[in-house]
Image (tube, rainbow over all chains, first blue to last red; front, top):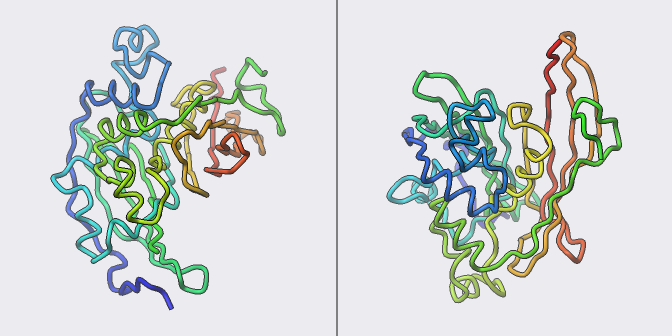
Amino acid sequence: MAKTVLSNNIIGKEYPSIAYKVSKRRLIAFAKATEEVNPIYYDEQIARENGYPTIIAPPTFLTVIAMQQDNPYEYLDKINVLLSSVLHAGQQYTYYYPVYAGDEIKMKNKIEDIYYKKNGSITFIDFRSIYTNQNNIKVAESVSTLAIR
Amino acid sequence: MVSDISKFEVGDQILPLNIELVTKESLKRYADASGDPNLIHLNKEFAQKHGLPDVIAHGMLVMAYLGRMLTNTFPQSCLKDFSSKFISMTSINDELSCLGKIIERSEDSSGNIVYKVQLKVNNQNNEKRISGKASIIIYNTI
């Protein structure tokens, strides 16, 4: 028996979208925190010299967007899941278009699936997010899998 | 190491990336930069209250290191899919190796080369932290 049983009714649940303007400062801090040494990720001039309009968001940067809210874990509260019982089990990205400093990204998030493993002792939830920019171009999609103990 | 990115063959390794040491400071920096307030990455007492010996690294920090390994070899515009399974928790004092191996090479009808890359992150005791994959496309520029 799973310790956490979630209603299948919440499959398909959509969350309000989150808007976030990608700031240069945030990109530079992210590059520093990930020990990035390739200057196209933190030095605007070098990014331009390499053919980019400005500094570019690295592959996992989109994860930052979900955190740009007063309570980044409200999406768990809303389905009565305790943050302390959650582990990040997997993350998947598909990329369609680059993200640059100054872009205004809108993230739309929904619960895609709920399933159980290890005889039902671990509950998994897949959240699918779609990211679009200010020109309404889809830049990426992601699936984030959380394991609930 | 292969220098022309269109010349990788199945079985080739791509240039690995080593992270010397995961420290409390690395986690604090990543928490600030990403905006993730989860105390399990920041506060030892909190982590211990939840049955862990100490704080653990953000899975997404370790995936970011893996992403760096990929973009060190391939321009980011080549990256189409990138996924990670977080196999075990990354601890402070872990020394990480990010590794990638070409497991498939094909050419599409437009002459673009498509690679499937198998990814992993291990620590110094060969404990697997991440197992992942990526799809890379090298556009035919002729």
